[in-house]
Length: 124
Image (cartoon, rainbow, N blue to C red):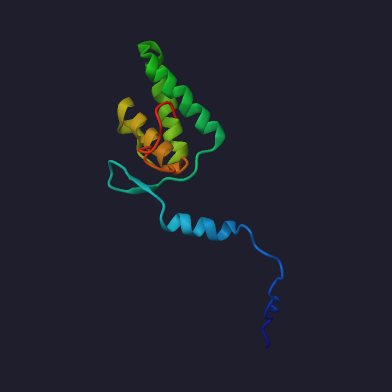
């Protein structure tokens, strides 16, 4: 019995300006990771806009130092870490450790710095 084979496609004459498949493959090969308290590596991915805004709210609340607000934040922070790092054991971490994890996620997925700032003029 003959098997059906797919027909090879002809090379396209189009100019590819962005290949997201290639970008994702390269990113996954060099993705930064967070090693959890269990010793497992959790790759840091992108941050959805809703999660980014939630991080900003949490950071502002932490900066205000309102202890009543901090107590209600713990479940929110754990949920956010669980969303950004599926399977990460956030349950055993302190609020400070959770915020450290969030800050690392935010720094690891943010834009790359363009320089060290050593040549900047004051006020720039």
